Image (cartoon, rainbow, N blue to C red; front, side, top):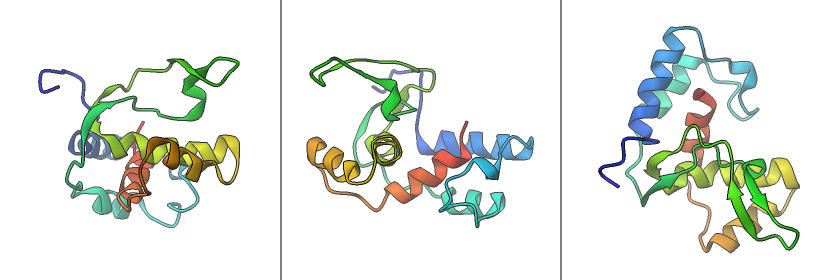
Length: 136
């Protein structure tokens, strides 16, 4: 993975968020309600020190439920919207996938996704969700 030219690393995403913020390209109104009380400067400060990478993987970059294609039996058949694909911490994708399970499928699906993935909710998800709101 070290040779992969595509990144979804938190440090790179923070730098991009700073560039976008300085260009007036961050819209707080689009943020999740749990983040709207923050200013852009406060949010950038909170993400300025990325957590240690737990497990380096190829991240989708937009791991929301509608971007995973399923067949009639529920088996994964593919993924779409791969424009942000890159190497990063698995929690960068999991944090958004878990969030998306609740948005798209309703309460209780977050826990089922974690169970299916074989992990417990990691507090680092809060970091990656705020970073998501600062991103493209």
